[in-house]
Length: 130
Image 1 (tube, rainbow, N blue to C red):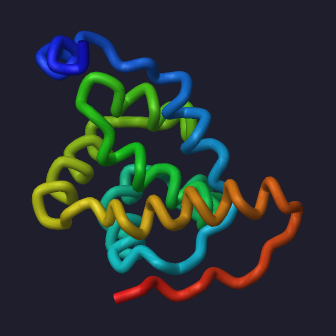
Image 2: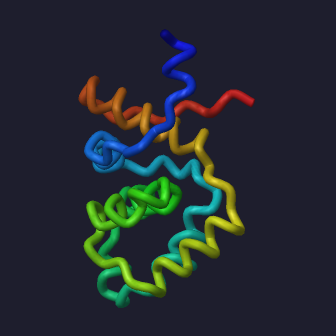
């Protein structure tokens, strides 16, 4: 049975759970090295007021959206921020080519947010083991 499943291709991606996880990130824990670079390069296509009104958590959410599969990337982005123009899309392509997705830091942030949502507290994020 598992060998049969391993040979099956994924034909569609269910975007609802992905958007739910992304939307659940309410706190940024300063663990993504290139988030400032992302903000500078990928959000220039927004007007100044919209860019300044974004929280750190929303920027993290957009960073994660930027690295989603091409078939759902735009819909994930628009679930966080309804503005997605050609300038933003082009900047994201260049950003993805230059910087690798910091998946370990993102997973740590997701776990941190979910654990703290369950506990109802916000303690400091423990350091990652090297």
